[in-house]
Every structure is written in C-alpha cells, then in structure tokens.
Amino acid sequence: MPLLSVDSLQVRYGAVEAVRGIGFEIHPGEIVAFLGANGAGKSSTLNALAGLVPVASGRVVFDGTDITHHAPERLAPMGMTLTPEGRRIFGTLTVEENLRMGAYGVSDRAEMDAAWARVYELFPILFERRSQYAGTLSGGQQQMLAVGRSLMSNPRLLLLDEPSLGLAPKIVEQIFELIGVLRDQGVTLVVVEQNVAMALEIADRGYVMSGGRIVSSGTAGDLSQADRLQAAYLGAE
Ligand code: ATP
Image (cartoon, rainbow, N blue to C red; front, side, top):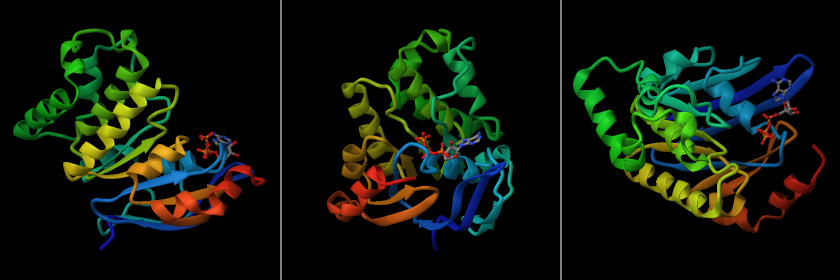
C-alpha cells in the first residue's frame, strides 16, 4: 500500500491555478524528487499536502486516511511533516526552543527523549549551540535546525522543500548525505530541489512539474537521461 496517495490535486490562489489536477503515489522507504522550473507548482503541491494551503479539489490519502483538508497540526502526530522552503525558523528563539516547537504533537515522555537524542546525534552542532538564538546560526546550520525541528515529531514521511537553497556546495553535500541517512533510518522522503543532478543521484524516482502539471516521471536513472526533463525547464510555463 502506498504511504501517500494523491489524486487530481488542484491548488488555486484566486485566479491562478498553481497545481492543475496532479496524481502520484509515494511508497514506504522511497526518496522521491519533485523537479521543475520556478513557478512549476512544486512548493504549492507540498504546501497543499501539509495543509498549509487549501486543496481546491482532489484527494490526499496518507497511510490509509483521507487527509485532504487536515490542518498541519493534525498531520505531525499522524507522521507527516514539512520542512518549508526558506527554513522558517524563529531567529529570536534558541535552537532548543525551535526544536521543541516541532514536538508539539508528542506527549509520550520516552518518545520525546528519543526525539531529542536522535536530533542531537544527527546534528551535534545543534547540541553545542542549543542555548544560542537560532538567528545567529549559519545558513547551513539553520537548515539543519529546520530539518531537526521536523524530525522532533518522528515523521514517517518528511516533505523537504528546497533543502539546499542558498547553501555552499560543501553544505549542500551534507544535506544530501543527511537525506540518505534519514532514509536508512526508515523515513520516506519527498524532496523538491533545484539541484537536479544531486537530487537524481539520491532519489529513487522523480516527478517533473511544469505549469502546474506533472509532465514526466520515472526512475532517477530514466529522468537523468530524459529529454523531457530539459523541456520542462526550458519550456513555457
Ligand atoms: P519555486 O521553486 O519558485 O517555489 P514552485 O515550482 O515551487 O516554484 P510554486 O511556488 O508552487 O512553484 O508556484 C506555482 C504558481 O503559483 C506560480 O505561478 C506562482 O507565481 C503562484 N503562486 C505561488 N504562491 C502564490 C501565492 N501565495 N499567491 C498567488 N500566487 C502564488
């Protein structure tokens, strides 16, 4: 059974139809990349799945439950979280306070302790800086904090929107390494990325969006060769 199943998903902002009835499935243990030019509808898709923008029509099923109109705070306890584009951390809160905000759905003490241990083990730098204001972290550390915050609710499905955006090449490599580690820990990942080469290196499969539609899909190997990938980037929106 797919972990996430999306059927005829449509997202609108007033007259703008950002996502025009797309369908796809994500299976447990996969890393799936969403690729495409700016404005193709990738962020709108993730935000709609995460309940941050309304679904105009269509259906989203997570682990057998219809979550089409669920608010984000209902999704984290179910096991699905989004690390948004631009990180959205709180600069005037400490690292630890930011992380704690990610754990709002967790009530079990042992689960909470395990979440702290896991995040600080993945990101020792966040442990070192746990009492610092998040705004004083470097861009790469802020991205790690954003991912760490998402991990505090122990998600089975993590949606990552442009995790490498604006980061130095060395940090980008660390972020992609992290994606692999998370998969090895049993997390299923959907990753929106502008860094196509690296995304296809780590992903199992991918979808290419253009103009609010999925215009191509396939294994990462297929997509790296496909002419349609190029067409989606060069083509009209
Ligand atoms: P990017 O990589 O730039 O984030 P994207 O593929 O994620 O691109 P979206 O951000 O989903 O694309 O944008 C899809 C379309 O929706 C674009 O035409 C964009 O201008 C429009 N759009 C996105 N957010 C809004 C909004 N809040 N209000 C109005 N239009 C929006």
